[in-house]
Amino acid sequence: MVYENPDGVMIGLEIHVQLNKLNTKLFCGCSTDYHNDEPNTHVCPVCMGLPGSLPVLNKKAVEYAIKIGLAMNCEIVEQTQFHRKNYYYPDLPKGFQTTQYDFPIVGNGTIVIDGEDGEHEVGITRAHMEEDPGKLMHMGSIEKSKGTLIDYNRSGMALVEIVTEPDMRSPKEARRFLDKLRNILEYLDVFNGDLEGSMRVDANVSIGGGDRAEVKNISSHKGAERALLYEIMRQKNLVRRGGTVVMETRHFDEARGVTISMRTKEEEHDYRYFPEPDLVPMRVTDWVDGIRAVLPELPDARRARFISDYNVADTHAKALTSDIRVADFYESVAKEVDPVVAAAWVADILKGELNYRDLGINSFKVEDLVKIINLVTSDKITEKSGVDVIRTILDDGGNPEEIVEKKGLVKVEGDIVSQAISESLDENPEALQDFLAGKEKSLNFLVGQVMKKTRGRADAQSARELLIREIDEKHR
Ligand SMILES: [Zn+2]
Image (cartoon, rainbow, N blue to C red; front, side, top):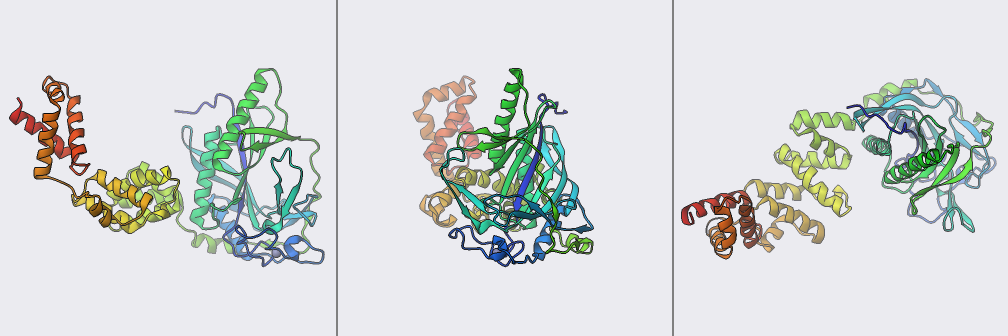
């Protein structure tokens, strides 16, 4: 099946990725660990751009940028250099931003996503390095703010700006791209996506070959999908009413779920780019092979390995590798128990329980899941009780053995089940008659009664078989 793209949607993304796993900023020694600190406490003359201060390039930041380029199947330039992009803005006290202009460090790559019609390739136009400006804090909404505060802690943080081709054909594809990119970056260990502002997105969107609008500063993947859904609907309605989409910059108001016009694209800005005289051009060719040699296993490769090494289903492999923490967790569990069984417990059950509570995989212990799986596979507790133990640990804490003991979950067989079966049949003569009259469904009801009486500790399959035997022997 080929996706027809009925509205002719074209979406391109520009993503600012903050290299927040570096210890220091891009051009100075200030610590990057500012997220929980007071404003303006991680600043120095360099990242404030005070006259006379000189930048010193963070070599690790360059290595990270190359790593990211290689992971996106990009070409790495032979030589790169920084430029000054001149403009005045309150979050940029020195009056220019140090960035890369005509020789971005990487270009020409691809990332494969799960598209509307299967695997879909998104082109990477370029990725360049630049410094983050400070952060403007609007008092209230950006439209009505009476004043603005500035925090320069962020100023000078290393960014990699990734620019894609307009290859995404729906908001869903844009979100999948962002999820995949984040996943790759986390596998590379170059950034922590949980920190505020670690990934900021601008989206260009057009329909039916018309002009494009740019939606700025979207802060989450879900936000990107919502902003794009709204923006496409706005453009469609505009065209349907006979209007034309104009090239403009819009802001996404998360709270209201709408995009608002900020400014129409007037004149093309003249930033007066010129080479940064305080930083020499860099030849990076010699670094590339060394970095390629130590590139970690990436999500797609790991997914393929899970299928070949552990024999897990593709859907499980995909679910398990879409987050490096889940993949690591799974591999630890799979070392202790049957990998296929482990895959089902992690991907289908544990992930669901965690998502429901909005918790990460680190909220659960590998050894606890191993214990639970062992209790189930050795027939000590039922699968249903296993799920119960997971829920109890997540909600109230404790360890598997204690919970099994305290809640009396040890699987019951023999007399207790037989008794529950006789009671269920005695108490529900109508259901029994219905079943004898050929209504298969009433058997489910009776099994349910047995499970209820044994508080889920009976094995449902064998309870079902025992019920049928009992009916055949005593009631036919
Ligand atoms: Zn600094």
